Length: 98
Length: 148
Image (spheres, one colour):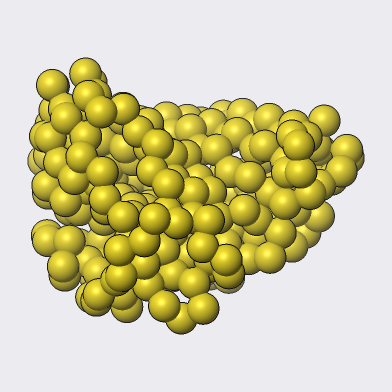
């Protein structure tokens, strides 16, 4: 089941600081006897435009937290982060730069 | 019988919709690179078989990580025009941990929490202008984080 996500986007000096938390077991092969369950893809969009595309492995920690930096940015910019795991589950969160 | 056929058709359509949606929204996952058991193989599959050492890649990570299940690794490439960053933990069963592509509008910076099975070099590969650069940093791990 796709767990909740949390995201915070704040204006820094010259860039926007983005922190996003995904609730996910990120279970490895070793932990699950060959049935790993982990996020594979994630995408960061700013005002509808994709700026970061990530591919990750089972070696990313449980309930992953990522930090990114976006160039410039302004209050109210819409940020969307979405993920897809190896079982086809996905989730996304949308929020505005504060 | 008709009932069952309808049900099956419905299920098929649902399955297709479910399968097609994520494909449209996400780039393909580089299975070959992520299933590689050595960092050399992973680098080949990523299309970065060799990389020049560079001081433009900054790796911020603890020298000693007490808990291998959550090792914070912060990476930034100061090389102009960096479009992609890959993070590799040399001694993990599958060394490639993550790869990020940055378009205009994003700083080539990322902070992740990774699992590390044992003390290992962390290798970061940055691609800029079609050229590949790398930097490494050793992280000592007291308790491994790959098993249960």
